Image 1 (cartoon, rainbow, N blue to C red):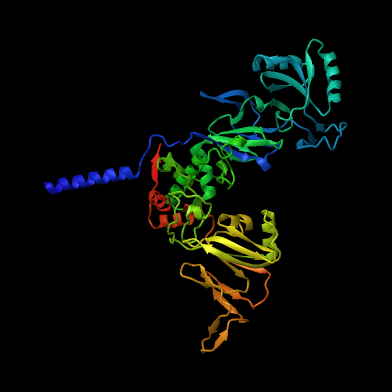
Image 2 (cartoon, helix red, strand yellow):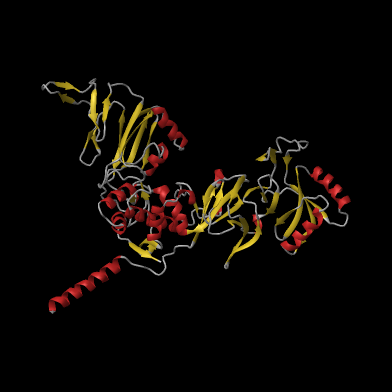
Length: 547
């Protein structure tokens, strides 16, 4: 009987231990919705298309949800564009620089100057009734939403052209009040596929969204599908910033297959889902100054929208819904990268600063990733100048100044005839190129040089002279010997000694090396580890919490 009681006590203690290990907080600061910048900055656009088989609606959001202001009816595809100058070429419109290429006599050029009828209307219904009233006179007016509903007509390129039309309309509609509306770069036109204006609105008066007629059906932006709503705002460069508003997990549906292969093991995908959710939560204000939370590129997390979704990655998001990692009660910056090169890195050895949960750990669970690249002295000099460093003359030597405990280069010394430069930590990759120097775990030397590598994979010395022994016992100086050497993954041709103008970088790993290695997570999942175990391996002293 005592034995059975002891089992019950042990079982209870195990349950309590597991419950404390997987802590589930009541609130872990995960926003319900997120705004993703699809086209922003230099990629902001003058025009974009929207389409949906269920139709399209336009409106705003309140605490009660979406408020429909305009239904585009049977029109399945619309174009949203700046209220600007356009050239109509067989019903294809492209923005036209009228200030430089002034051509007021070209009937294919339309402009942002309009004529307004009767001031403002108290409702859309009243404005539409007025449109029906004057349309019988052959006028083609359209709705406008600014501070109130209005009715305008025309797309004139010059004020004189608008004045001429104004006088013609005055004789046709003598009792209607009319005003010429000048160009305003903040206004946005909505047209059908033929270029007919259906609506003009001004985002300076509020945030207005486009949704599919059935809000549960994705809509297409330039033929690429997205869940949720699409928002257009004015970009600093005069174009339009395009933003996708959607639920957090719906956003992650579009992130996961872009950041990890959908064929990866389920537990690895779940670990990636949690890490990606953490990134979104911690960095949700990264682009606040641009009107959205995160961008859709690798500068944040690559996001492909509904078009990129896969069942396996969606399931991983659903299975971990509401889960994030915390450290001392706060969400962590769950950084991740492609391949660690055998050992992840301490945060301070890459970006500086120290985070208790971003400590380098062993990561020898799968095949290593090796890379090689040659850079000429001229390439390196140009990179230094572009980064703002003073000229150092002709480069005479490049070598690793120091390494971290895990094998990352902490200092890269570049010596020249007129000075020297020391690149430190992540700045090495930033200056020479992140896609060129794929990780900080590398060795560098002249194309013809041979280095002795220590057990920690770091270069121990660069010998002036080495000897080899052939199969018959003959000893020869390595200099001028033609042959091959094994670098750990492939055989590399040994070149004759020369005054090479190139420096050879050979390394392992891909990415910054901080936090979770995606290839390592896949390897661990294949070994039978759960996503919780994977996360606890790569992030130190953290807790998995759930809304």
